[in-house]
Each structure stands twice: as C-alpha cells, then as structure tokens.
Length: 303
Ligand code: GLU
Image 1 (tube, rainbow, N blue to C red):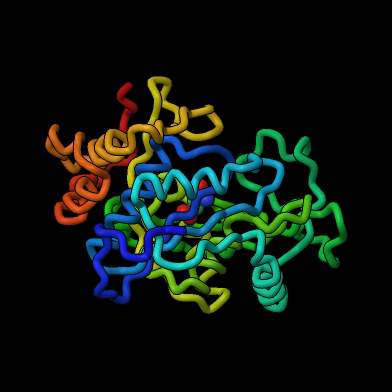
Image 2: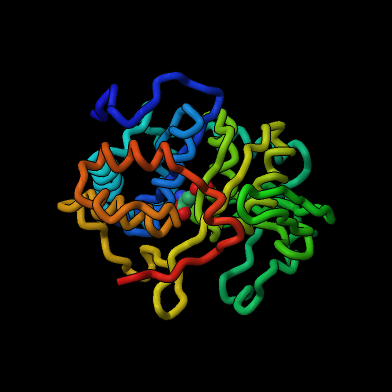
C-alpha cells in the first residue's frame, strides 16, 4: 500500500489530474522513470492528483510479474499515487462500448489483411474499406480517418499536426487477436479518469492527433499534452524494453531519482544525490521547470 500521507505530496488538491501509464512489458528502465517522474512532478507542482494506470492490454507482450514489479519500484522511488491503480485489463467493457459508439457513427470496418499483405506499407492503403460486414473472429477492426488536420499545441513541442487520412491512415482499434488497441483504450481511460494533463514520452507525439480525433468522436474532452524527450542509446534507439534496457537499480533509489532529474535538465545539486528520496522529490517539486526541456525530443543516454 502506498503511504497515504507521504511527505512529498501537497494535500491542497487542484483540478489538475495527471497519470503515468506504464505497459507491464518489463521492469522500469531509466526512460520510463524519467516519464513517471516528469508526470509526478508536474502534478505535484500543480497541487494536483497523480494516478497510475497499468496498460496491460497486450498479453503477448506482457511479462509475468512486471506490473507488480513496476508498482514496487515506484513506491521505492517514493513516487506515490493518489487513487487505486486502474488496470486496463479490467476495463474491456468500456472499450467495447466505445467501439459500439464508433460503429454507430459508421467509422469502423473489419480488416482481413495479413501482415504479409501489408509488408512495406507505412500507411494502410484502405484495402478492406469497401468490404463492410460485421467483424468475425480473426478480423481486425479499423477506424476510418477523415481528410482533416488535427492539431494541438504541446507544452514543450509547440504546435503539432497531422492530416489523418494522408499521414496516418485508417488505424486499428481492435486487433486480430481481439485485443483492444492502445489508441482506443488510452482515450477512453484518459476521459473516464478525467485526466487534465498528459505528460509522456515524445515517441507518442504522433499518436496524439489520432487520440484527438477519437476524443471528438466519443465526446470526450482533450487534455493538455506535454511530450518530454525520450532517452536514446548510442545507436540512436529509444531506450525501451524492446532494446532490453537495463532495469533501474532499486537498491540506490536516490541515485536513480537524481539521474532522472539530470536527464530532465533540472540541474540538481551534486550533494542532493545523497539525500533521502523524499528530500530529493521535495526539492524537485519546488524547482520543477519543464520549460528547460522546451523543444527537446531526445536526450542521449549517459552511462
Ligand atoms: N503505455 C504507454 C507506454 O508505456 C504509455 C501510454 C501513454 O502515456 O499514453 O509507452
């Protein structure tokens, strides 16, 4: 159980609601700690509420024990959340309802294209668009994209826009294996949890216009967005579980937090590294200046 009154939380609640939404595909690595810390600091600075949502909708990619491991690591880092953790695997009814809404709006169609058929295509060519019919098992479901530009002003990345039909193409909302897709689930849950501020990695910048579109279709509000730089390794790859990024060393949580603050350009004093996590976080909330990351999309990993 998280400490109900940790020292580093401000108890005057504002309307701000933020969240960290890890996928339990492995233990937390420095890239995900940086994302967790940025959303935590932003929420605490605003005297807001900070939530953790486990995005466990992808059983093939899930690693047994990773969800509880991630939560234990957040606790060890003193990144305590304010409400019960939401598990997306328990929310499938809500996603099915959202899908039904999109269906009544005539936006969905089943897609039977194989991976092989689509090899080399970055944008879905619309092959199945003209063959409507109810989805059967084994078919994916795609959402039609309009010839409309969806734009938003990111707190760090200025204005970002995409014309969805040309730059994204009809996208999957229910996969062939009947798993609900991230794009749908994240929109439903950000709406349901009344999230006002999304702080996450820049790798999701190009998902945001699709999410704006789904919010519009599902009559959900659009939160503010802040996309923080992702950490890349020496080969220029995003530090992620796919590259088997090293799990953070939970035996030295002060150093982990200090290093994450350093990646977030918060210029923590060297001696802060030796303080208790709660002291480091108190300093970090007080001094939180996300503007130091203005325009930055990548930060090179320092080993
Ligand atoms: N679950 C996603 C990830 O781990 C993050 C989704 C989000 O923050 O919108 O990359």
